[in-house]
Length: 219
View 1 (cartoon, helix red, strand yellow):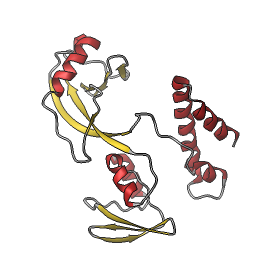
View 2 (tube, one colour):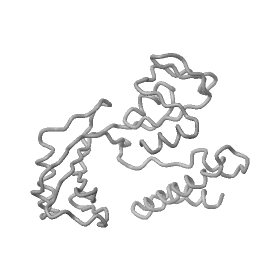
View 3 (cartoon, helix red, strand yellow):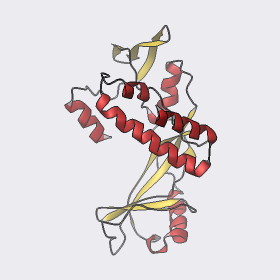
View 4 (cartoon, one colour):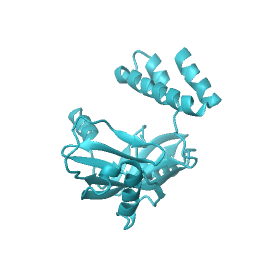
């Protein structure tokens, strides 16, 4: 995230911290302005990238958006001895639902928990370490007793049915217009959509998703 923010600032964007959105003005079905506790910002465009707070922002816009649920996930940094080679890949045990990946001389590990949580900064649950140790003993026994260097909790955002929320949006319209602003990177996002959609279709066989993917390819 910091990389995205630095990149945006280097191109003229202004980043404001601790400035909560309190109201969104909508006129004739379009965004007119955003009201924060520090003042009003007139704008015709609002990008809802609020993560766990996305549903709150959508409601402020009176948007008919999918209901999104914030859920708490725990992360741990372990120090196995001897350290794992840094060139090791990201390793995920799909049946037990736990993963690790090298991170310098330590490894980053998560038990892939997803407990419903209000959209506020989460704290580390007392029993989270025990859940992690149990999963590691079953999935990756040599890592089960590695000492914890650091632990924290974060929020991830899920749809109510836990399926990916993906769509064509307006990316294709912009991609097809060669004079569109930022057209050079729209193709990247169209490609990401196709990649995610085809992988999900391969697993679920969702006919609706296949039709949507085919429609994108034909356009």
